[in-house]
Image 1 (cartoon, rainbow, N blue to C red):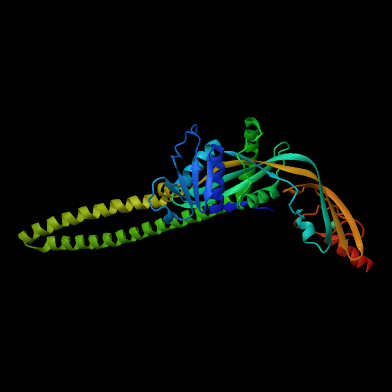
Image 2 (cartoon, rainbow, N blue to C red; image 1 turned 90 degrees about the horizontal axis):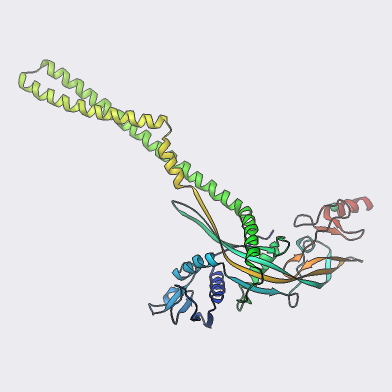
Amino acid sequence: MTDAAIPVTQSAVERITEQYLQSLGCTIEKQDNQWVIASPDSTHSELLTDGLTLVCGDEDDVGGRDNFEPLHPESAFFQRILSQASERCPTGKIAISSAGNDIRIPEWLRQSDVEVSDADFAPYYDRTAVVILYQVTIETVSEYQSEFLRAIALDARSEEFLPPLEQTFLELTSLDGATVTSDQTEIDPTDARELLDTANERLIERIDETIDDIHHEASRAADAEVEEYRQMQQQRIQELQEKRSSLSSKVDELSERIDSSEEAERVEALKKRKELKSELQDVDAELKDIRRLRDQGFRERQSEIRERHALDVRTKPVTLTEVEYERGEVEFELTMGEHRRTVTVGYGSGVGVTEAIDCASCNEKFSDHTHLGSITRGLKCEDCASLEESRHG
Ligand SMILES: [Zn+2]
């Protein structure tokens, strides 16, 4: 299964920035790690100053020069790009043609003892997909947790999800001289909105597990903090109890002295006893308070702690890229010993095999877990192939 998540890397930062600036109509002249940005007069963006030069990577290279801005995942400029991009969701366009692209052999075939001696793709028609790149941040109020980018690809017309295309997209666009252009996408805004909604649902499904993991971690942290607080209060109760018993024996001592002493000493002892009794009252009040809170399970404090560890999940579409791809059929020439067989399946450039094939024996679909085992009597999975082998010797 493709897991098209990438940490916010320098190459992703550069790609998003480039796509966004191009969508504003800017031109970028690249000289080593410096990008000189020229913006059309019509561009009103707080981002852009006259003669802006972005310096990719190292902050030290900027050295306080006017109009030079560092560009890297934590840079202020990139943070502004992300927040503006998520409002406008800039669009771009790339084409993935079959020409010059190796045919993507599915996992069930690659992991098989059956050999692919030839593969031939015949494109029949062009299709359009969109790949939406999301920024996902998961954090708690108390501490920063996780930030990553994730791509979701789907066919623009059928809304069929195309996970392999996500990987292809990330590979293609992270290469130098990526072919993302600022061409206007042909998808109309209403359709784009719908595609975004569908992609958003899918994104949430996909990151659910990650959210769950972080959620467990956060509640464990909250549990630990609650427990620590409980122990601290228990300790305070103990301290107060000790203080109480010491005070009360002092009060008893003084009472004895008062009964048996001279007038002058008696007045002094009475005064002292009064002080101690008031101190004793304070201790009793505090004890009563803590015990009451303890008996209620430190409710308020608990909810304050749990609130601090609650998760805040935010997803923002950062870019939407229209991808032209070709759909057709691929013909695989399969060889196993002296046996040969040709298989024809639906295929898309950058997408891979788009059609499921079943085992001729058990009808199980070939997948990442069910590999092709034999081609002697139709296509059979590994389990059926070894069963057949033991039967026929
Ligand atoms: Zn089978």
